[in-house]
Length: 177
Image (cartoon, rainbow, N blue to C red; front, side, top):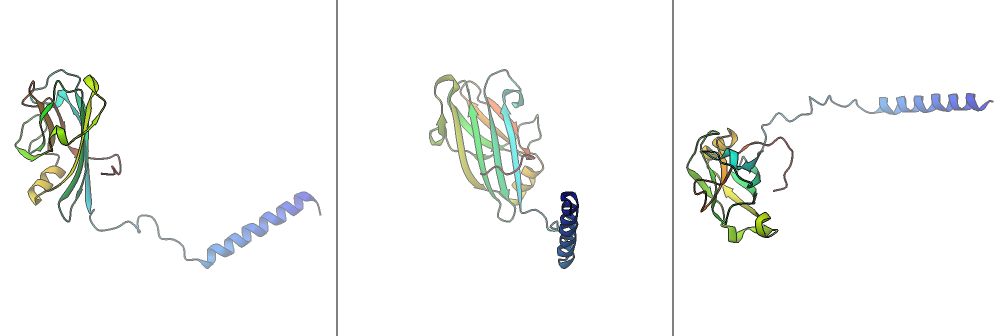
């Protein structure tokens, strides 16, 4: 028997055994049928903070980011806010809303002070990270999920806000907060 014929017979035997194995098991459900029909149990939000989002906008080098996960059953909102390159120490940081992009809203949750933040770098490039958990009301949860909340950080030079970011549904995956 030639090598070519041996390989051909071996391939046919493997294919037949593979077909036999497949027929022993139930065919899998289509992917769409296995999708959960229940509503999600959490909502992830994020945003970039910048000077152009402040009302009214202004020029500057300050910036930051925010990421959070809201557990819908309990209203627990776990968040992480970073900001850097401010004109001076932060005097107030918080979540505000309800307010559409381009409008100001009331302070909903005051974030911990800069003294409770983790500092990264020093000098002009100093950055700060705040993490925490807040419990939201049903109305606050609805406003957050509708994109009617923003994060703002104020300084003495910019008491109405040095940086701001309108929070939105995250499309980037799990944040780990």
